[in-house]
Length: 131
Image (cartoon, rainbow, N blue to C red; front, top):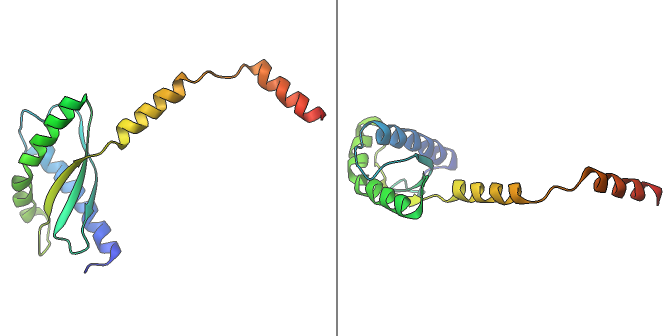
């Protein structure tokens, strides 16, 4: 088994290399819009890796892009052999990462919250100070 620091280094290298390959080598028409590799989590034996992908767009665009990326997994793994010096190149499993979509949703909710008036907050502070 690999130690934790080595796994983290491997995760970083895989993320960079997969991102580079996807932008320069993969020409699938299903991959439209902004696609980002957010993180890679490699198993402790370094044989499998879960690749988290963020795709901007509606649900059908996201699912279509995920299918396109997953269909290129074998090609990406084969290309990684020449770029990464590991005994075993991990099998890649792609998963949609909803973190950016969730953050965007939370920001919209926060933007919609009404702001308190300055006179209300000043009045509360003044009355709290007099008590």
